[in-house]
Image (cartoon, rainbow, N blue to C red; front, side, top):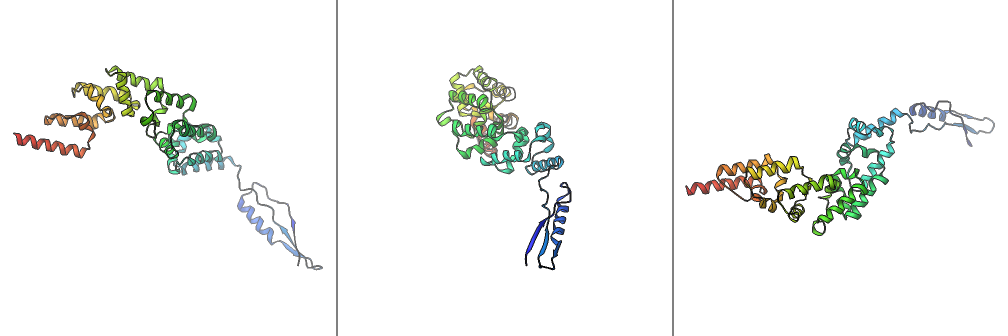
Length: 311
């Protein structure tokens, strides 16, 4: 028995739904006839189903919104801050995800990054992202696994220009002393996003203005790089004022323990200082702040007992 398939042109419009197309496809399979003279079965072949790739702009937009939600990204915020999202294809969005994934960043971490910087959603990985990764690997000298740590610690790195921002700041920091054992690491790459003239130099000048020598300030910064990330108005000034006027401290103590500026003024510095004053106690700055709350309380109780025995 010979079976011949004869193509029958599709009758339905290409805009019909895939479900109707499938029904037409199945019905066509059932249409067949037998030639009584030669016994040949002639079956009509079904029309090919229309492509499952939709060109409906509304459906395409909905797919992109669902994609953002799957990444835990706020679609409303993304649209407001990045209007280009509307015209970007889903494939382009996924290329950004693939690029970040190639550097070890997990899908569960994309939401925070894209919420902070929605413009990344429509960037070109080859011109915008890979040069940054190459800079961190080759110029800064990070290893592959530290790239992810750096990005998660400071996502702003992903929107910085290598030539205009990152390289000049790296050169400045290296001249300052961030080399050898003090070289830039995944913990300090966030310094690279700071403007040399607008951010880093004013902070150095402020510390020098307190009475420290330039070399002393450099040593303080290398010991506590976070100093270069603190606000002059919101951190340095109120803490210096409290240290000098309320604690009657000496600048040499800050030189020995620059980490002082990394502690909360109201949450730790003032609270512990007042407790010590109430007990008539005085301890070195590092001892007052560096130990845990539990250990601080234990030492305070111990000091009270000793004073009680003397009385």
